[in-house]
Amino acid sequence: MTPLPFLLILASYLVGAVPFGVLLSRSSGIDIRTRGSGNIGATNVTRLLGKKLGMLTLLADVAKGYLPMFVAARLLPDSSEKMTIIALCGGATVLGHMFPVYLGFKGGKGVATGLGVFLFLAPKAVLLCLLVFGAAVGLSGFVSLGSLLGSLAVIPGLWLLHEPVWKIVLASFVVLLIWFKHSQNITRLLRGKEKSWKDKA
Image (cartoon, rainbow, N blue to C red; front, side, top):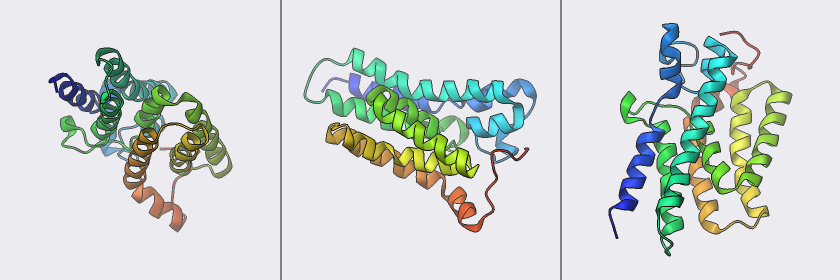
């Protein structure tokens, strides 16, 4: 095997590890890691710094999930291993966001980056995820609950669309990571102490 697959997987991790929430919020003088929820993702940025920076963070985090796989698909030659390598690039990107080397391996929860991964792999399944996310947040007021249920919806979505098994395996891996990173949110939801998106920072 040529070095290209390994370089693409490593590059995917390094791109995923770029903390756009931290970088975009620097101009405000606020370290989002020490304010609000402490998360580096779009929800905390929005609460602390407003919708504009929150939306920019969201778009950047989605893009860093999508682009490494897009590049890998273009650079890799057709082979029996191509899809496996692309899947590994997607997984590496999500791992990079959650455990970024630039921030001492303390990163975000991976929802937006995972969204970018599956926008590339199965956009129709993502539509189901967004519908579930919107319904959950709208009915409950909790972004975390929407993220949990929306991410979980990708698995039955892929199955209903008759997507290949490797996509379902990748989705299961990403969803497990997302739920792991939301463990504190799950505890607060069960205790009735989770913050609504309507709450002020």
